[in-house]
Structure formats: C-alpha cells, structure tokens
Length: 154
Image (cartoon, rainbow, N blue to C red; front, side, top):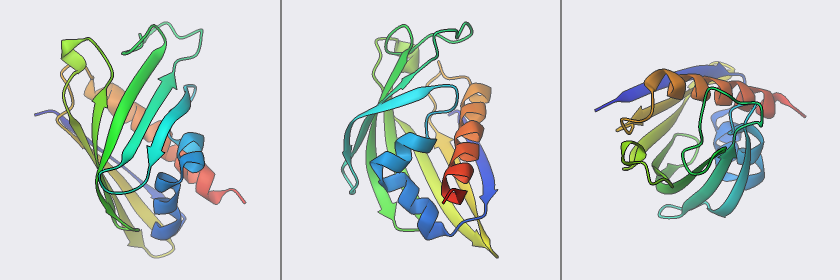
C-alpha cells in the first residue's frame, strides 16, 4: 500500500479551513495545483455526496500527460465522512482507462488547532501504482500553499 502525508500550518481557524473544502467556489479557487486549472462538473457537500472535478494541465506542460485525456485529469470524489472543522475522508477515483491509475484512493484531511493557526494534513492511502508518491506530495504541497493564501485573503 502506497501512501503519502503532507501537512502545513495555516494561520486560520479550523472552521474557516473546513469551509474552504465544502464550498465549491472556494474549492475550485485553491485545490488545482498551480499552474493547473480546474472545473467542477458536480458538487454535493454531504456524506455520501461528493464532486466530479477536471484538472487541466497548461498548454506548455511537457513533463506530465493527462490521466483522462491529453491535458486533463478527471476525478470522482465521494465524501465518506465529514466532521465539521475536524476531519474529511474522501474516496477518490481517476476517470481513466489506464489500469495503473484505477482503484479507490482514500484522502483523509485533518484540521488540528494550534494556538492562532491550524495544522492541515492530507493523508493519502492506496495510491494507484501509476501515481508517483513524490508527484502526489508536490501537488498537495502546492494546493496547501494556495489554501493558505485563499483563507488569508479578505
């Protein structure tokens, strides 16, 4: 079983951070790791609900190929557990024909209050064999940086 864990201390309350995960406009603003962009196809913020998201690589990207189409990664996310301001558990699948990228991956996000900040941790388990852990960690690190900027903006 391949897994990764990436954390960042963010100067915001757990409530504000949690809200950025369950608001579709907010999620789209910070989740796609730059320079990727995203588009939500569906969103239902309740346990058993979830979202369908396309992430698009920039036209000048030479290192990565899309998992769904030439420059697109499309994912289906199901909310397994939503505990406001504490924890989110998601089951994620790539929309792909590549057997090395198929199967459910689990993402557990935790929000741990620490003085005037919150430690946000993404714990990925069951990464498909076609997902390189170092690429997953780098994308998560970029998303966490964007989340920190998003929640600190007025």
